[in-house]
Structures are given as structure tokens and as C-alpha cells.
Length: 182
Image (cartoon, rainbow, N blue to C red; front, side, top):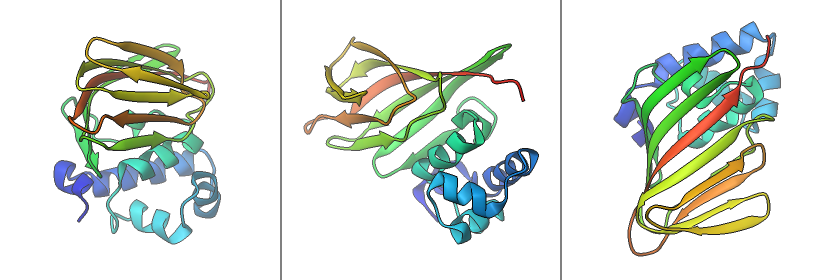
């Protein structure tokens, strides 16, 4: 069992949500796997609950489905997903006409890097650093961050959060996803 599943127990529920979203969009298993850049067998195992999700896999699948990460996770505040030195705890999700706003408490262990693929067009992220230091890379820019710093950027490009080598980076991460008419 992956650390993501140990932290959340989300494997079967996530798989069912992915399958339902894929089918609602008329995507085949092969098409979604190709768009997400993961193996068809891996996606099949994820959908059937035989494989537990990692944060990287969830982001990879959410983007071609056109949904925020929250649409794949347990739908309650306090849900946790963790892997490879990264822990994201859902603080709040606000669904409004025209957008979904997700708020996470993000913790990266010292020296850990979290790279995210481009989100769908129009998605914006904000990071407010609570403790530690590091860097945020987006759109060809590298921005050093420390306690109290705020970074806001278009997240429809690949982006990376990196903790400094000496201490964990703790931050509030806000992701705003426009809702597209379906």
C-alpha cells in the first residue's frame, strides 16, 4: 500500500470517481491513460481499486478530465494525500457558479521538490508560506520564498514547489479552477 493510501484510505473511492468522470466524458480507458501519460494497465488497476493513487497520478488524471484535484479525493475537509515527502491536507473546497476554489495545507520535507504538470487553461494558484524557505518555479521564473511570502501565478503551465535543504516548507496552497460548461 502506498503512503497516499495509508494516509487517506482513498484507493477504491478515487478509482470509482475517476471511472465515473471518464465515462461521463465519453473517454475510453486508453484515451485517458494516453492523455494522462500513464499506462493503461495502471489506470485500469487504479479505477478498480487494485492500485492506490499517488499525488502525481491524481494530478496527471485530473488535468485531462478537466477537474480540480478535489473532485478525485475524498470529499471532506481534512482529507490527506501524501507521497514522497509531500503531504497535502484539504482545508476547504468552495464550489461556486463559475469556479472551484481548493485550499490545502501543503508540507514539503526539507529538500523535497513537487512538480506539477500544467493544469487546464485558466487555473490559478497561490502559495502563502507559513514556515521554511524554498522556491516556486512557474512560467520560466524562479521565485525564492520564505515565511510570509505570497506567490500568485497562472497554473496552466508546469510548475514546481521546492523546499530548502534545511527545513520543511509549510504553506497554504489555494487553487482556483474555472468551471467550464459541460
